[in-house]
Amino acid sequence: MKENSLVTDDLVARDLAHVWHPCTQMKDHEQFPIIPIARGQGVWLEDFDGNKYIDAISSWWVNIFGHANQTIGAAIAKQTQQLEHVLLAGFSHQPIIHLSEQLVEITPEPLQKCFYADNGSSAVEVSLKMSFHYWKNIGKPKKKKFVTLQNSYHGETLGALSVGDVALYKDTYKSLLLDVITVPGADSYNMEPGEQTEDYVLRMFTYMEETLSEHHEEISAVIVEPLVQCAGSMRMYDAKYLTLLRAACDKYNVHLIADEIAVGFGRTGTMFACEPANISPDFMCLSKGLTGGYLPLSVVLTTNQIYDAFYDDYETMRGFLHSHSYTGNPLACAAALATLSIFHNRDTIQRNKNLIQRIKENGQRFENHPNIGQVRQTGMIFAVEMVEDKAAKTPHPWQQRRGLKAYKHALSKHILLRPLGNVLYFMPPYIIEPEQIDLVLEVMEEAVNVAVAN
Image: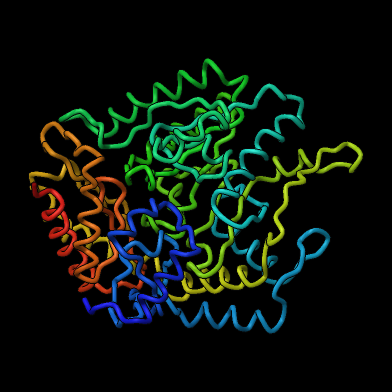
């Protein structure tokens, strides 16, 4: 990599003087400098010194069609000349009407209504409040508990944090959070040797069945990330669990919230992660890839049945009065419409099948690695979990920060791979070329070897 220029040094100093970065212990940057990025193009990010990096994690999973995408950029530019923003209370605009129609068309029935927010955490907050408020409106105010899976993550606002289960984010704030019910999930990492997937899912689902049977009169909703617990170390589970969960929620009269913020829009190989289970949730939360990584936007889709429970004379005070200033921003909606047009015009889901297979074939290099406890893949999400002992799956102590060592090595090879603890993952833009997949996985293997070395 090239030496830092005076421009980069100046930007870094000014950044550290005033910018508090997310998900970061800022003291780390005394030893490991921030990298100011000058521009992006396709899968590449370029810094002010001309170093280029493959964005192998889609800039936190949002950039699905590459940086400086002409289709999305042009749509936003055109919209800026027409309408940049208008409040969505009492007013509307063409982009949000068109977007809502398209989202209803491509999501599972009977999702019919779209409620917009600014980001994924906010969408989760909306779904939690809307579920509780629905039961209150129909005369069941005792239904106010939420059920979540172990190792889940749904965002970092207080409601969203409450229904998550990743200690790194949650433990500090426990005294502020909702009291939720957490049950074991069915992620494949915990299967017994020789156990069949269906048997394992059935065995693990008994915990959910028992919880719903015992507490359904006080449970408002179950919230899950379909198929992949992304921030929870990219742990993955079989679609059969979702099928069982939908049936159980129906049986016990409990809502199902599908948090598809990270896994929607083609990440798991289908447009939405609920599709392999052939189910529809009562609430579907979408964000991240919705705008192709261009602008903040999220949406909660729900059913007419839920909508109708809020539809009444104002004096009844049954309306859902949640709001955000930038709800349904026209520029963000224009970006989302352009993103959906790319899916349609380029047959993205079909094209991704070849990329998914390339990742699968190349990822086999990790199967026999002595320090990889599991290799896992769902669609365009690939992950390897580094361990001290392969047979026992003994993890490296988190204090050793093995993932950080891997991250530094990958950056030196011009690949952006930001780990989750001891897990390295690959979640690229869909425009990545097969040869670039080969390069990323080659560097990932090097990074693992550097990270596990004593």
